[in-house]
Length: 128
Image (cartoon, rainbow, N blue to C red):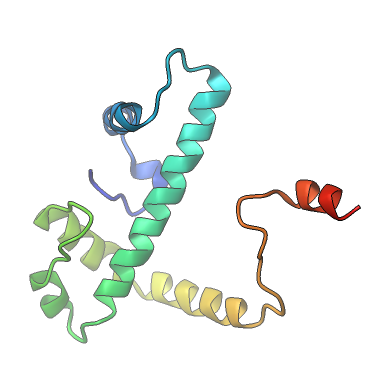
C-alpha cells in the first residue's frame, strides 16, 4: 500500500483497498458508520506511524541520492513512492523544521502517558 505524504492525498480507491485488507484481519460483518470512522482512525494512525519509521530510515543517510538508492525493506513501498516521499516530504525544509520543533516539544514533557489504550476517564474512574 502506498504511503501518502498527507492523509488528504489518500485516494478513495486506495481507501477501499485498505478497508478490504483490514476486513481480512478483522471480523466486521455489517460495518456501521461508527465502525467505519474507527477503522479510518486506525488507518490514519498506522500511516502516520509508517511515515515516522520511513523518516527515521531516511535520516540514516547524509545525501538525498543515497537515501533514494536505499529504499527500506519494510512497508511494501514501491521505488516511486519512496522517491516521492524523499524528495517531496522528508527533504523539505518546512517539514524538517516542523520535525525539529515537535522533537523539542516532546523533550519538554514532564511526564509520559502511561495508561496504554485506556482512556483518561476510565483511569480516573478506577482511581476513585
